[in-house]
Amino acid sequence: MPLIQSHYKPKFPFKNGHFSTIYSAKLRPSPKLVQQRERLQLHDGDFMDIDWSFTEKPSRKVAILLHGLEGNAQRTYIKGQAKTLNENGWDAAAVNFRGCSGEANLSYQSYNAGKTDDLEAVLNYILEKYDYSEIGLIGFSLGGNLLLKYLGERETFPKEIKKAVAISTPLNLKGSLEALNQFYNWVYRNSFLINLRKKYKTKMKDFPEKMTLSDYKKIKSLLEFDNLYTAPAHGFKDAFDYNEKNSSLQFLPNIKIPVFILNAKNDSFLSSECYPTELASKMKTLQLEIPKYGGHVGFHQTNKLFYSEKRALQFLNE
View (cartoon, rainbow, N blue to C red):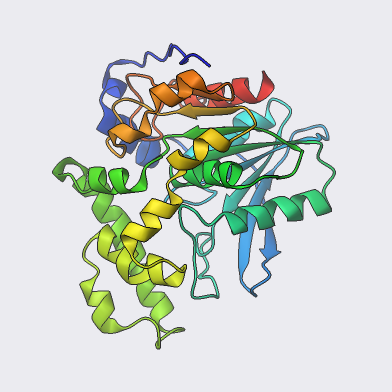
C-alpha cells in the first residue's frame, strides 16, 4: 500500500506542533455529546467504565474508542470523534481504562500500552450483550499502540472487527519515552508525572506491601514510574522489558485487516521509528499518513470537526 498523501493544511497558529497539541487538550471547546456510562466487571474483580453515545436511529455499527496516557472518555478528542461517528451512522463505545473514569480501580494492576486482555474483555462483553455486525477500533496515542498490538499479536479475533485507526501513536515506546524526556516536552512530561504520582499515592493505601513511601519519593521521571510501578505491577522485569515487549511496531506485519495510522511529522511525542514508511509501502493492509502538521492529537480544522476525526470516519466507511 503506497503512503497516503496528506491534504491537511491548517491555519497559521496550528502549524506549530506545541500549539496544536495544547489547544486540542486544553483550549478546544468540549463537543456537545450525550454519554451513558456502563460498568464492565472484569474477571479479576476489577472494573472498567464504558461511556456510550448513539446514533439517532438504531445502528449495527460501533466504534470502540481508546484514549491515551492519563486520558479518559471525556477528553475533547474522544468526544469529538464520538460525535462525528454518531452523526454518520456509528455508535461509539468510549472506553475508560482501569483507574481513568474518575474512580480508583480495585486491583494492584491498572492499565498500560500493551494490556490487550482488557481490550479483549471489552470486545467480548459488547459482542455478547449487543447485536453489532461491524466493529471499528480507534485508538489515540497509547490507545493506538494498544489496539495495534492487539491486532498483531493474535492469530484470531472477532470477525466483526473490520478496520482500525491509530492516531498519534508511539509505535516504539522506548523512542517515545526518550522523546518525552527532551527539554521542549517538559510541560507534557510533568503533567503526566503529576497525575501518575497522585494515582500511585492513592493506591499505596490499598497495597502497602507492594507500594511504599520510599518508592513514591523516587518517582521523579516517567522512566522511574515504569520501573517502580508499571513493570512490576504487570509482570515485566523493568521499564526496558515493558517497552520492548509492548511496542506495536513489531506487531504491524502480522495485522490482517485494514489499518490506518495518522502520525504528524511535528508530533514531539514521537521518535523516528514511529513513521514506518518502508513497512507501509510493502504491506497491503497498512495505510500510513504523515501530515507535516498536527502535533500530538491536535489536527485542528474547525472546533466542530478535526481533520483526524474526518479521516478516521472516511477510513471506516471506505
